[in-house]
Image (tube, rainbow, N blue to C red; front, side):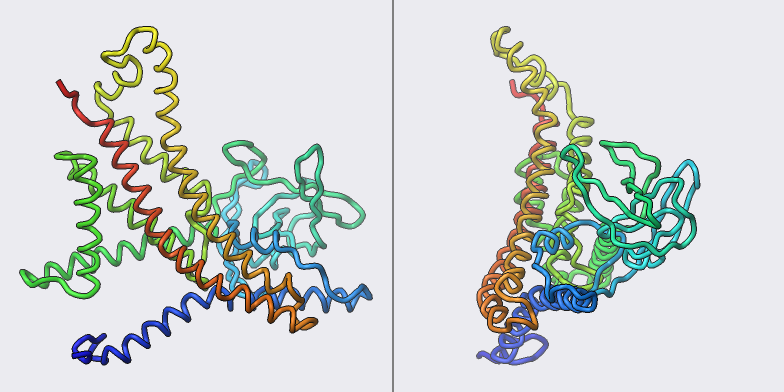
Length: 410
């Protein structure tokens, strides 16, 4: 009987072993990948300092390791000092549109047309800095009036680096680059387009036959969104908003799962980026309020059946709720995904806290013995969190839209 359960006619006993082996490798890869990366960097720093006559070895900085991983970047880091360059698309009033590959900056060792890369992010030098390709030294970070600024010393002069314009601060240039997160989002969109077109084509070719394999999995997930999210929250109106809800769920789920795969072209912390979760929340905010009917707005500004003094008191609170709901969507997704990445990276960092690689093998081994089991366990939890967070974001979006479009009960 056991031989009837098979993956493509592989006996179940063999298939189960293969499955658990693949799963083990999948969950072990983050440890191996990040450990190799940090070991390479740490050894490089030690050799560099020794060649300069300094004390061999450098104190491990876990904070830098964590934030270098979870932050966005203008290049896709592979391992050690090997990265895949990404297109830089920059605009300034002085120089107009400038386009080049991030490899022009040599991982932050060169300035190109007064643009430099600081911790993976493009920044701009003042107008009196030389143009073209210029070899530069180390960029230092200083705190002035509680704010951290980046400073470059070049040929006896000090130059302060300028960040790109953002919603909070407009500066002299705008960054429209294809960063690691942008590239990963485009990849997620392409994967989803390919999957849905393949499933759709499969249904057309199959006719009345029952779906199997991956098509069956997709049908189960789509029916789950319909039966457990769309219909309960939207009732008879669910078909109008179903495409948005399905797209929302699968896009967030795909981005979450891509972040758990620690090698190119995946590994980007997409939904752990506040700007991305804000964009997703804004879409829900716009649909909710643009589709909201008179009953929805009446319950916000002049609640029926409530004494007038209470209406005056509650109206500002209800109005704030319009913005608090999407804000909670944004923060919840961002915080949960980022927290998972930080915990995993912190556990990996224990290997280097317990002992420097190449200097204290016993300490590093003790750190690995402690970090690896916990990291594997956290990866299993993060896999579940990826599913749960996609579901929560979708069901809350559906509930907000449902409340805004519901007709008054008499």
